[in-house]
Image (tube, rainbow, N blue to C red):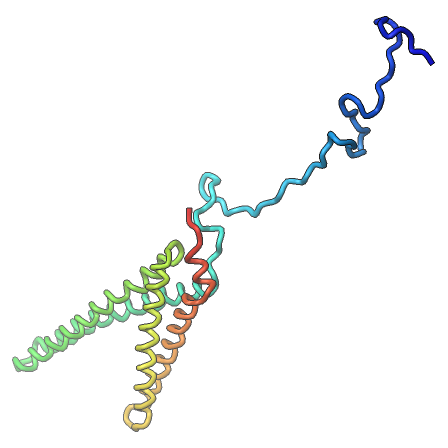
Length: 218
């Protein structure tokens, strides 16, 4: 079959052979074939980071705080608040105790009352100052690094030591018949304090807490 003169621009041109030239468009609904068409990959889905103001990711928000660290933080806030309350009570109690003996006719009783009231006030000031440790540690656990974790572990260790000594002393005092009810109440409080101290210590010393405090912060 003749297609005419190939030099004649008005003659019938030969049809293109398959496999040459540009790849022809595939019909709708049929995936493209041939060596020129590469299969299209679906875009990867990356986990979304929590967005902050302006749509930017919050620094360090990609790793949530472990449950043990959350529990330790709450306990530190509670213990620090109770210490603040106890310090205020001691301050008021010391001032009130000193005022009771200030009007005494005996100078010795007045001096003794003032001395005892001053000691109680001093203990209250120490208690208030010591309460800053758990409160500041708890406040910085969300954005803090390893130093904040070490601070919480040291506080939990000291809390465990003193509450354990208190439990031993109260158990030893149970053998006497004097003030048995007060000793039992003190023993219960010491056991509660010991449990909270161990909770803080374990919550901050475990491996999830270590990974959380080593997280990258931007």
